[in-house]
Amino acid sequence: MIDFRSDTVTKPTDAMRKAMAQAEVGDDVYGDDPTVNRLQDMAAERFGFDSALFVSSGTQANLLALMSHCERGDEYLCGQQAHNYKFEGGGAAVLGSIQPQPLNNQADGSILLADIEAAIKPDDVHFAHTRLLSIENTIGGKVLPQQYLADAQALAFNRGLKIHLDGARVANAAVAQNVQISEITQYFDSVSICLSKGLAAPIGSILLGDERLINKAVRWRKMLGGGMRQAGIIAAAAELAITDQVERLAEDHDNASLLAQHLMAMPEFSVDVSQVQTNMVFAELDKRFDVNHLSLLLSQQGILISATYSLRFVTHKDISRQDVLTFVDVLKKCLPQVTVQ
Ligand SMILES: *Cc1c(COP(=O)(O)O)cnc(C)c1O
Image: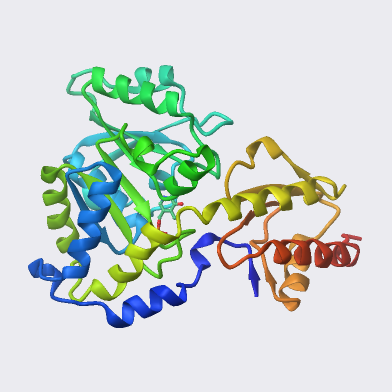
């Protein structure tokens, strides 16, 4: 199978499976799992934080961050397109009584600083307390400029807000800019990082913060049912995600760029290549073609895509350069068979 639906489909490497089989474990709710502890210490050190917490998913990492920064009746500012607003089931509102204040994302993924300023509520009984600014990088595969992050941090600091990074794919942002991940995370009070996407761990995310925030997050995690026992089994793979898989992401970016070039040369698709900065390609398929039929034909040839007219292709460890070229060939054969009458 060549699976373009998401980088979440990556399988663990052989080295990860071996490390998992051999992992030393203990009961992590007691703080006894040496592999989890080593992972958390390593992540905190590498990414420049006091503390780190290994959690089950990116959604859980974001929810713990929101619930640890904000109290009932507080609000967080975020993008309309933010994962932790749009794609996390309204968890902050449902479970934390925290109100999101979504703001427009610009074409480059950023939120205008003026829009952030204007959305900060005065201290008045009519309003929720604005506590937190949440930024996402990469967002829709796009990288936010370092200067923008510095400016957002300064704004948050000056207005008494905390600042969180949904860094599910921050490793892609770092590799694309040829900087260390810590050069991006330095601007934030807390950061969530997915290890189970391009970094290929089977399960898990990391939440970074100061000791006080992480202590709160440990409590919320337990309440949410996320306290894990011999979690060293999965932490062993998560360690290798951080140490061995970051630099490799450059191949995914090259493959996305290759795919974008090919799609751009096909009249059936329109692609904005300026938006192809990491491992995602967005392409519009002309309405003369039946996208569901196309998706079906491709799947019969072992290629999986998400079927909407605005197509998103995600490249990752388990898609090679040759797979991209194979896909382009198969696509060219399939398109004439899926025209709408
Ligand atoms: C995938 C993703 C998440 C959530 O991660 P899960 O592990 O799928 O819960 C959060 N934020 C962003 C930007 C993501 O892409």
